Image 1: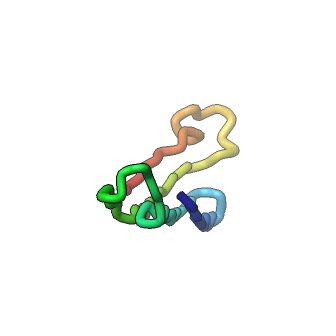
Image 2: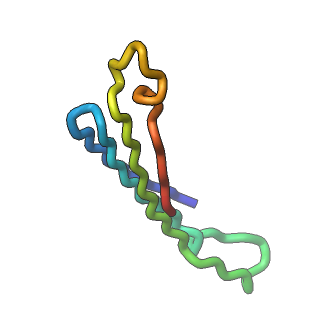
Length: 72
């Protein structure tokens, strides 16, 4: 079945990255050999963020680590 999706990411001062992703798939258009099979369409919405205190820190490893979280 046909599937489409789109996404968006926004970066704030190279410290905070916010992203979102949406996808949909038309399972209701699927046809099988059994005429009684019925499937429902699927949709998915995902969010994510990443925080990096200082990506250019040379001497402090912990400031360069990116902390991430995501939800779907």
